[in-house]
Image 1 (cartoon, rainbow, N blue to C red):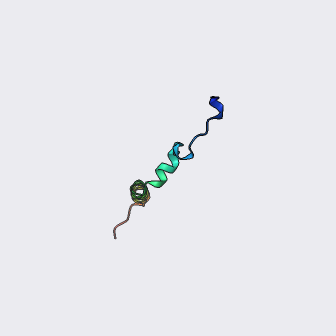
Image 2: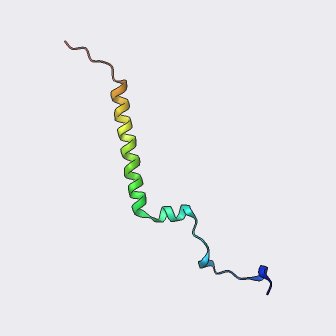
Image 3: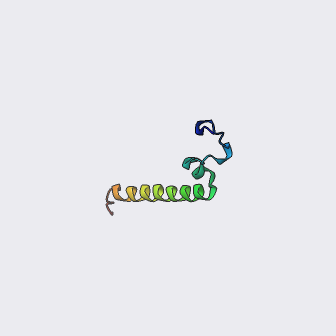
Length: 57
């Protein structure tokens, strides 16, 4: 039998990594929460860091 004439089962193909990541809804949920936490915390810290010193009356 010629090895190049083999018919491969389409269901036996490996699922790409990107598709496996996007199919996992709990991973997407955790990633969304972590990214939002990092962005909003970083934004808040940046606002505190760049805030001018208040002059008291």
